[in-house]
Amino acid sequence: MNAFEKVYLKYIPHNSFEGLNIPLYVAATDIRRGETVYFSSGELAIALMATACVPVAFQPVEYQGTEFLDGGILNNLPIEPLIGKCDALIGVHVNSIDRTVSTVPTKDLIDRSYHLAVSYAIKEKADKFDLFIEPPGMSRFGMFDIGDADLIFSAGYYYAMGIKDRIELFQKNL
Image (tube, rainbow, N blue to C red; front, side, top):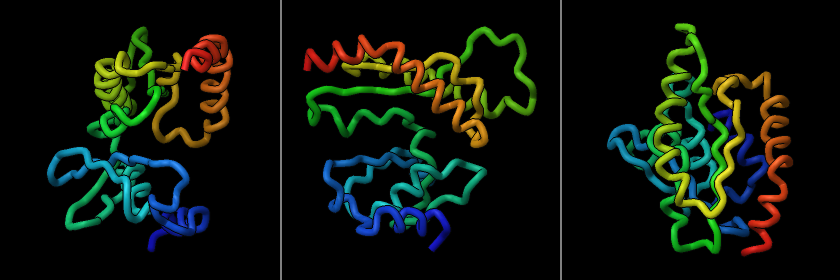
């Protein structure tokens, strides 16, 4: 058992999708088969570890005879298992791309490349949501900027508060 699994089990002791109050789908990338896998039953901790397994930073999660990495590699906005099962679909994309940068330092090329690929895939899905929220300027934060968690939270929070009327109108129309 690794450290992350211990944390998950501490806060979710039943460790099962079936023990949750609402259905949950967790996307992970099967790195061997090159496809997105959706977990919705069984061990919750394994699915959570797999979907959060950022390449290079962590070893793949071995489970059911294959290896899993971050679900966002192939599908960073996994809407597919929800289509036809919800009254409304709300999408939130917090990796918006700043398209006005003049240079990209070499040390940031991998991070920028990843976010460009994700952003391109997200654009094709945005119109499938009943409400799509995308705070601007989030690309100033890298995927490993854990020390900026408060700033990241604040940026998203204040953006959402700025579109509160739009969100409330959406809720009223449900």
